[in-house]
Image (cartoon, rainbow, N blue to C red; front, side, top):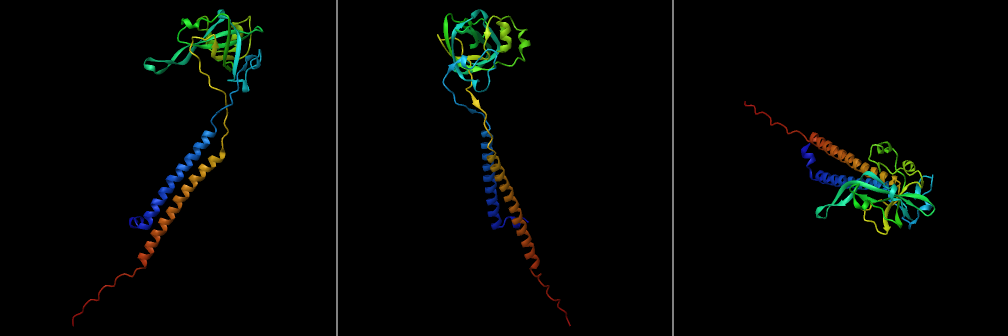
Length: 266
């Protein structure tokens, strides 16, 4: 068997099959990667900012294409009703210029618009509740940021265990109770810029995305390449088996050497 496998013709076949297996496996994995990437969310078009009043309404949930849209809002902050959203993490500067993750608070401040309605605005992030940057600016401000839907209310009960002035989520249903004298628009704005400028650390918000659709054709291509690789192994096995069988047949067909006749003395 070993002599058959090491025959020059079969050695060349072994090398060819190894090359085919490596190539076809790589090509199949590449097509599988294309298939997986096709289902990943893709960045959607990011239109110019619009007035927040066009997308956020009183009593209507923010949803669909309004989520993560850039908006602008002009009004005055109601500093007396500002809240701190607890246990929020942000990227902060560390010694040596490195970036680190720090736990702190979002500054959630009601912005009262000209029509009397209120838009919840996350002005930024602070590391502690007594940070000087928590003070809201006086007078008219213009905020530019991204509109986000109200957060789930699973943690609203936990807000009752927090100190006064702190909440666990940015929930419109909870804010309506905390700001009873305000007509609160649904959702909230995460500020990216403010005029006059703010001293707080901005909260990063991803731009809008759209769900990707899987390209099943690439998955079929991947399976096809791997089937080809299995077929190459199958053919290699048959070639080797036929070579071994042929060798045995040739050996069986060779005449056995005749024994010399015994010499008989008279």
